[in-house]
Length: 186
Picture (spheres, rainbow, N blue to C red):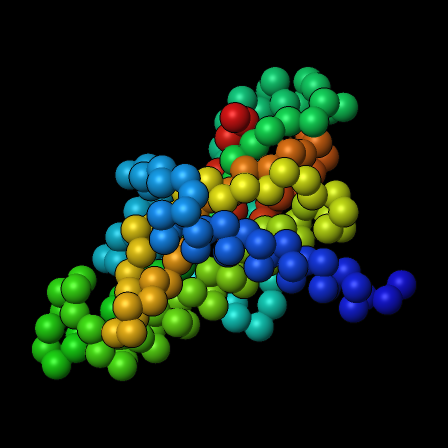
């Protein structure tokens, strides 16, 4: 089977997700605040994203699925769920000695762009865990970090959660994806 069309559909889905995040960030969509558990804590985060591909190993799904017993008991139902991603690490470089959140410089811009690319990879991998792109429906950005801005003023949105429709078999698979922190039914 030719993988090129599948990769294109996955890429389009990921671009759609980031476009939704960007529109929400710019005030054109939902403006839900990030739950406190999804905020980045640079002194605690040891999580990293592989920029070269999705993880080949799976994690245990234990404790990652809210209301698991109900979802498992109804495997043939399509469930509306929220997929919360782990936040990519954020250890911003200081700008001329200014380490504040508002500091701007080319080194900070490069770090923001790299972090946004890692978030894109994380989204791609989480979406691939659902199966073929045609298996996905109703994808909506749900939460995002407050935007950090480049020196040009452009925001660098980081998506932290999205919602979609899924069967139990998909939910099980996605919960094993290392970039997924939690799955919650809506």
